[in-house]
Image 1 (cartoon, each protein chain N blue to C red):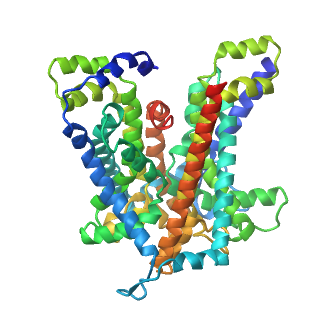
Image 2 (image 1 turned 180 degrees about the horizontal axis):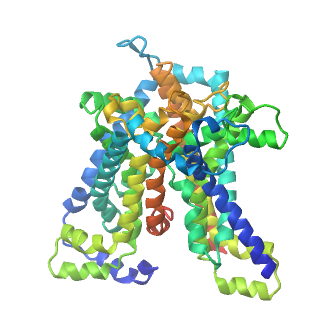
Image 3 (image 1 turned 180 degrees about the vertical axis):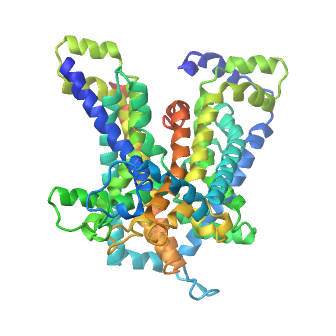
Length: 273
Length: 312
C-alpha cells in the first residue's frame, strides 16, 4: 500500500492544482508589472511590490460602489428567499392540501427556465412597476429563481425533524405558525444556513438581469462592472485582474467556511429530491 | 434516517383529523404561489404569446399575430440547426466530462489520508468562484498572444505564433467547455463524495478479502450505491447547461461563425442584438420544451430503475 499512497498524493496534488490554478493565475497577473505582462515567457510568480495595483483597483474603477451594490442584491435575495420559503417548505413536508403536487411541479419547472428567457417579459413587467433600473428589481427577479431551490432544500430538512417534537408543542397549545417558528426553524438551522448561502451566492454572482435591467452606472453590480472589462482595452490587465480577484476572494473564502453546511444541506434536501 | 424511525406516530397523526383548518396550508403556500405566478408564471405566458407574434423593437408598437410562423422558420433555418447541434454537443460534453472528472476526484478524495479536509475544501474552489470572474480569467488565459494556453502551445511546439483560441471556429467551443467543466466538476465531486459515504465498508472489505480487484469492487459495490446520485447529476447538469448564459456570452457571444451559439445565447442575440423579440421567444420556448423532455425521460428512466430494483 505504500507506493499506492504516494501515487494518490500525487494525483490529489494534480487535482488541487487544476482546481486552484486559475485563481492563482488571476492573482499573479494582478501582481505583475504592466510591461512584463506581455513577455515571451509568462511570469509564474507574483511581484509583491505590485501590491499597489489593489489600491488602484479601487481608485481607478467604481469597484467600491459595485461591491456595495452586489452585497445589497445578495443580502436582499437571501432574506427574501428565506422569508418566502420556510412556510411552503413546511407545508410541502407536513401538510396535506389540494394542489400540493402542482406546487411541487411548479417549483421544479422553474429549474428549467433560463433567466435569459424571462429577461424580455420581466423587463416589461418591471417597466410597468417602475422597478427597472433599481436594485429592488434585481432582488425580486433573483428571488424568483432561488425560492424553488431553497424551498426544496428546507423541505428535505423538515422531513428529517421527528414529528413527536411538534406534537408536544401542539399539546402545549402552540399554533401551527408558532410551531414552525419556535420549534422547526431552530431545529433546521444548519440547513437554513446552507440555503441562505446558496441564495446569497446566486445574488452575488447573477449577471444577465443586472446587465439588462440596470442602466444607471451608480447601480451596477460587481458582475456587470467586471464583465464590462472583457474585451475592453483602456483599463490595464493587471488592474482588471485585481478587480476580479477582489470580487472572487470573499466568495471563495466565505464558501470554504460554510461548505460543510452547504454540502449537508444539498445532500439531505435538494439533491435527494 | 430519522424520519424512518418515527414515521409510525406521524402516519397516525395524519389519519386523525387535526385541528388545523383548511386555511392553514393555504396561508402557508399563498405568498410563494403568488410570487411565482407574478415573476415566473406570468412572464412565461407572456413569452409564449410573444412567440406567436411578429414583434420587433425596430418597429415598436407593431405587433401582429403570426401563428406558428416563428417556429416554422426556425425549423427550416440552417443557422438554427447549427444552434441545436452546438447546444447538444455543449450539453453532452459538459455532462460526461464534469461527471467523469467529478467521479475521479471523489474517488481520490474518499477514504482517509492526511490533509483530507483541506483537499476536499480546496477542490470546491472553482464551484465557489463567480462565473463572470471565471470567464474573465479564462479569456485572459486563452488570449491569442499573451495567454497562458498560447504560451503552452508554443512551448510544446503545437503553434509558431499565438493561437487564436476564442476566434478560431474549431477551438472556441472546446475553450468554453474547458472553462465550464472547470467550474462545475467540483459540484459532481461533492455530490458523489457524499454518496460514497453510503458504500457499506463491510461489503468492500469482504470483497477485498475475497481477492476482488479494484475494478470489480467498483462495479459490484461502489457503482450501485452512487448510481442514483450520478443519474441526478446527469439531469441537473443537463438542465444547467441548457440554461447557461454568462460564461459563454462573455467569452464569445456565440461566435465565431456561430460555433458557440447555444439556445440561450441565440435567444439573447435575437432579442437584444437583432431586436426580434418574437423569434427570440420562439427559440426560448423550444429550449424549454427540450429541457422538459429531458426531465421527463429522467423520471421515466429512474422510476423504471427503481421498479427493477424493487423486483429483485
